[in-house]
Amino acid sequence: MTDEQVLAEFRAAEALLEGHFILSSGLRSSRYLQCARVLMNPARAARLAEALAFKIPDKLKIQLGSVVSPAMGGVIAGHEMGRALGLDAMFVERPDGVFHLRRGFRLEPGQKVLLMEDVVTTGLSSREAIKAVEEAGGQVIAAAALVDRSNGTADLGVPFYPLIRLDVPTYQPESLPPELAAIPAVKPGSRAAVAA
Image 1 (cartoon, rainbow, N blue to C red):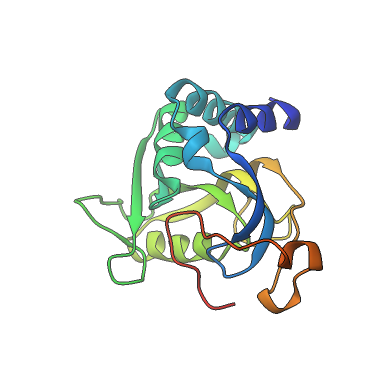
Image 2 (image 1 turned 60 degrees about the vertical axis):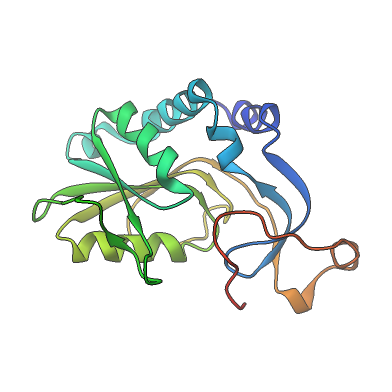
């Protein structure tokens, strides 16, 4: 799947938004990818996950024992990646502000895991999820995401395979370009923004 085909999937789902957005990191952006909308169609979600699974090297895929994703945004993406790879998919969540495996999910000691995200911007949530997997006994050997908003600058500490890399500038709230500052900000997504 080419980058243009990936973006076409987002456009078809009305999931490529333009405006003034407050990201979970607290940063601001003029574009937002609403993965929940692109993943709400099971056939589209499967196509995207299968295309991403194709990008992960076989030498990594054969080592994997499961897929883990961070809740909320990564749950559907992780489930579809599990389906594409023929692996169990589970998720970590933040009942107390810190990611944990819950709901009876367990990893065998040393079990090799693919961390699956919907969107990576700074990589902070991914690194926090990786830490939770490690604390649960697993070993994240690679990460994947539908979208890398960092355009390759996010360091997750493991090999990272995004379906598409985008260069979408982000800004500190006090450093907005005038055209963005003129638009009222909205906070999409599943988490409250952190102070930037």
